[in-house]
Length: 324
Ligand code: ADP
Image (tube, rainbow, N blue to C red; front, side):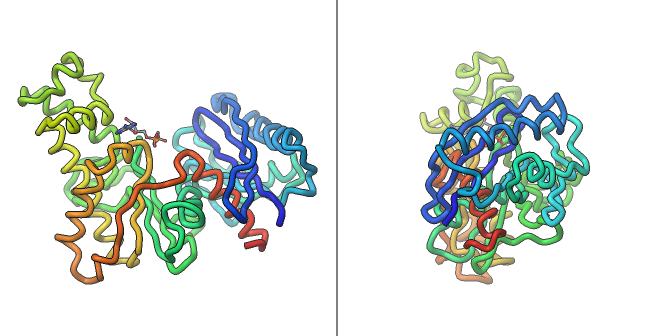
């Protein structure tokens, strides 16, 4: 079996990893700054160089590599291998032929996949989702990304648009979301939304250790700081994570009704809060989900950490190439 290269196209860093798609092991990896402000052509040139470097430095030949999978942060046309809207990259990359360009520059077959769908596929194959056939991933970070594997297959929908679990509406009268809709989960429980709950509590003058912890500078309130206060027993901070978990639980309950997952995997930076976030999700599911066997649904943390995306992208490329 050939090795595959998984790429993580991030707003800050470009990362390329050589992955053994049979074991899910990352054999070698390298990163370089994206320098996204230089535009798509420069970034794609750097990406191709990174791929060449990885192959060379791992002592391989091109013929040893089966192909490249690129995880990209945004809306794509997976079938055409074209980016449509990458919200965090300057210019947003409308209609950039990313797959074709990398194929031309490297001579390697290339496939695109949304970055969180790549994480989902990686976790399903070799991480917190291994051994079961239906999983849902919520990646709780600056936004809330998502992905679904149903009956052993990554759910794609039109052009790969399925799985945006952060944009499930949990309150149709709710606050405006970055996407333009109102009341999406992301507007309630992303990292910035959690930080905003902490800021509001301090600004309201509630009795909480968050005030002294941030030295009354609201800009210093982060989800990490709130998690620390909660671990130390602060009631307001605990309440904030209770609420965030409740909101995610409400959305996860809809996902349970829709696809019947065996595991709900929570990842992203905010998942480092651990049980502070997971316990209220579990409780909300138990209280709210009636129409499917909720006792069989485990809510777990992601396992592959930073490597989930590159492993998933590489395995996705292997699947498309007909290897697995
Ligand atoms: P992004 O979504 O930007 O790719 P991440 O998935 O790394 O980034 O998530 C970043 C978010 O995670 C930020 O809102 C940050 O405050 C939050 N975060 C980082 N560490 C922790 C922690 N230990 N506990 C809770 N939240 C955290």
